[in-house]
Amino acid sequence: MPVYLEFHESDSQFHESTRDASPDSIMLVIDEGQKKLLMTVPSRVGMITRRAAERQARGITKSGFLCNDGGRYGRGHELEVLGEGGRLPERLRQSPREVY
Image (cartoon, rainbow, N blue to C red; front, side, top):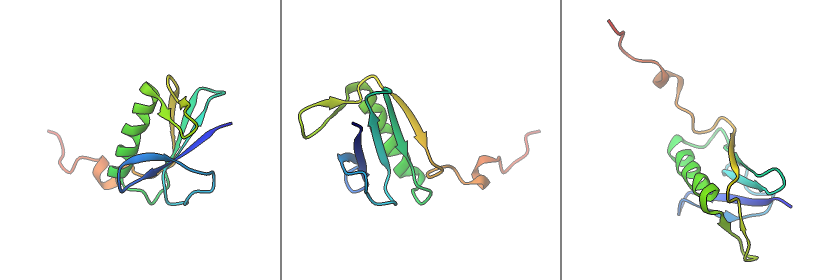
C-alpha cells in the first residue's frame, strides 16, 4: 500500500496525508513495490516551494520517512517529479544579452 505525504509550506516539511489532499499542494507518493517516490507538483506552485519540497524528497530517499505506524519508508528509492509547477518562466530561460 502506498504512503501519501503532503508538503506543508508553513514548515517546509512533508506530513502524512490521505489520498484526497488539496489539489494546490505538492504530494509525494512512496511506492514500496516499485521502489519509487512520485512527487506531483501542481502548476500553481512557485519555484521556491518546489525546490524546498524536492530537497525534502531527496532527503527521504537517503534516510526514509518515519510514519505514524513506526515504519520508515522511502529509503533507497528513486525520485520522479511529475507536473509543471515550479519551473522557470520562459523569459528567464533565455539570456537577455547576446554572446559575442
